[in-house]
Every structure is written in C-alpha cells, then in structure tokens.
Length: 466
Image (tube, rainbow, N blue to C red; front, side):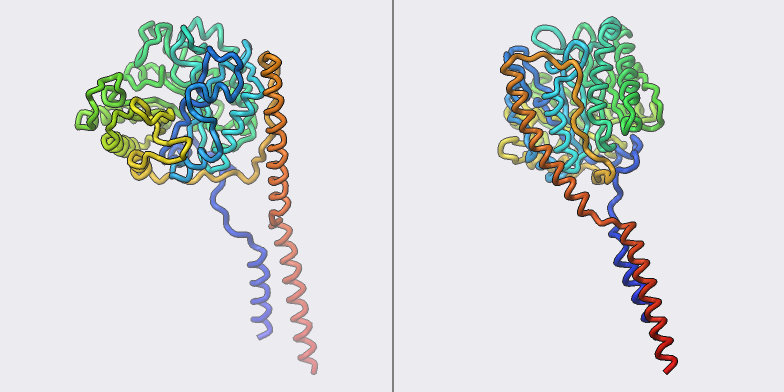
C-alpha cells in the first residue's frame, strides 16, 4: 500500500511539473508550399500605404496614407480582418516619396509601416509586405521608377537593392509569418498591360529585378535567410507568353520562393472599364476563370513553386449578388488547384470600387465576404514564434531631407511612438518575467518526489520495527 501511495504522490508531482501542450509555433521556417497551404483567403489593405500624391506639399506619413480618401489605418481595422475569418493580409506600400536617390527610407515612414505590420502579426495574420506603386504606370504625375526595361534596370538596380536592404534589415528578426514581395506590377516603357510591346528586354528586366530582390534579402541574414519571398511575373500577368518568359530566381536555400500573379478575370465582367453592361456572372465567366486557373496551375507545376493570386476582385456595379457568386466560384476553383487568393479592397464600396470592408464603421459586405470565407480552404492559424523578440526600428542612413515643419511633425510622431513602444516593451517584459520556467520546475518536482519517496520509505521502516 505504501508503494502505491508513493507512486501516486510521484505521479502527481510530475504531472504538476509538465507544461500544457502548445499549438505548433513558427519557430522553424515553413517552406513556401507549407506557408501557402496554411493560408485560407486574404485581404488587401489597398489605396492606403500604397497611395501617393505628387501634389502633396507637406509629405508626411499621415498625409500620404490618406491622400486617396481612405482613413488612417487602425489596429481595429486589422483586428476586424482577422475576426471575420481572413488569415492573410497583403500590405501594399509605395516607398518612392519617402526614399532618397540612393533608396534609403525615411525613418518616420518606416516606423509607420512597421507599426501596421506589427498590428497584423499581433492579430495572428500571415503578412505580405511589398514595393507597390514604385512600379506600374510611369510618367505624368506618377512616382514609378521601377520599369521593365534593361536600361532602367542598369540605372536603378543599386537603388532597388538599397531599398530592400533597408526593408529587410528592419524586419530581419521577424518570424516566417511575414513574407516579402519584391515588386508589384512592373510595366515596360510603353506602359503596356497584359504583355510587353517593347520586346523580350522587358522580360529580361523583370527577371533581373527578381534576382536582385532575392539576393539582397538573403544577404541581410537573420530570419531573412529562410524567409519566403514572392516574385511576380511581368505586370503580374497570367498571359501565356508572360508565364513562358518568367525565370525563377536562383536562391541560396531550397523551397522558399513563391510566385505571384494578379487576375481580374474576365476583365469585361470585373471592371466597368471592360464592359459596363456586363454585370451578370455567367458561364462565360466560369470558362474564363477555369482557363486562367489551369494556366496558372500548369505554370506552378513547371516552376516547381507555389503560386498565389495576390489581387483579384470585381468592381461594384450594383450587382453584389453576382459579385458574391463570382467570388465563391473563383476561390473554389483556385483552392482545388492549390492556389490561394487575396481580394483587392481599395476602400471604395460605391460604383466602381472593390471595397468590402467599411473602414470607418468596420462592417463588411456580408454577401461577398461570406462567399470568400465559406469557399476558401480551412488553412492553419498563424502562431507567433516564442523565441522571436521585436527589435527597435532600424535607423536608416541618409534620411530624406524634410522641411522644418515636416521635421517637427516627425519628431512629435517619434516621441509618441517611443512612449507607445516603451509601454509595449514593459508589457512584453512583464509577460516574459511571469512565464513559467518549465525546466526549473521539472528539476524542483523531481527533488520533491525523491524527498517524498524517501520520507515514506523511512516511515515504513519505522513502523515495521514496532
């Protein structure tokens, strides 16, 4: 009986010393395929950090972020995305108005981007951070400087590398829930959509930019050595000639590259610019989607890497039921081929807009949102790494010159952020200090068990002598 009692006491002490089993965390790098499989469906924070305005006199983060009509992004907005069921967010960022001629990023802008990325990760989302309207149409009032042209590549490749060095160093200690996308939609010298009209040099330039991006990020080390990186085709097109001309960059590690395309297919239905009278989802839409998905799936197989559709959607033309039907079918077909999709939301829900989240009221277009969530694969929750600690934002060298008023604004923002960071750091330290030290607990438990067993044994011997 005494032996049984001893065994029970020992078991109780050992059970008390064993920690609860935690979900699988992001402590080890996911491969590209694992990360894409973990995604269900995503949402784009469009027309926000990617906005720009050459007419803005006082170029500050808040002025640029809101210059296209959207409110300043809040933590509540990001929380609403996760709470509604999306587990992936793409954060498009235009850097042109906040970099110098060498590609060094203004500290205030980097801090703002950093803040939004942190919110998304804290909410448990997979995050894609990119270089957005630094590509795209150029000329006139545009800020684009990355063009699918070999001459342009030669002249700006160092600036591009420096930009990505800035970004990569800022987030090098972040775990693999954060992905980098090298560039958005790069156009040739003629601003040609779908496919270039300037010859194969446009393809060569895109492939060269992709290689510089991968090499640059990997060179920064830390978690960037195995971070999953995303490279896009020419203008992110699914045109067959474009797909055939894309060359996957070489990498220092295996299975950590993802390719991205954008597909508003068919354009005649998705945009009033295509055909304003075509507002009903029909068999022609289904056939176009099927054909595009088959091409993308074949492209993925030939490359040997997963492919995501980083942008898709349908403009509002007072046809929400058809838009919802489109969203459901599109996501179903993508999922059946192992492709994941991210809805383009530009914050505009009126005619001609893609918005499904009211960013002021934090309410959703439920018909379309339900179609996206309900037809997406289950995915896997993004679990934060236990051993990844946030670092202070890296101070970039050679910051962009600002006026006195801009400097004052930036200083005020920096003071505010410092105070917020101090509170967050204190909370983080308090959390870590209060965490149970399980190895120590196991040792203490073992000592207590040994002492208890010895005491019971001696007690037994004492009674046996009587």
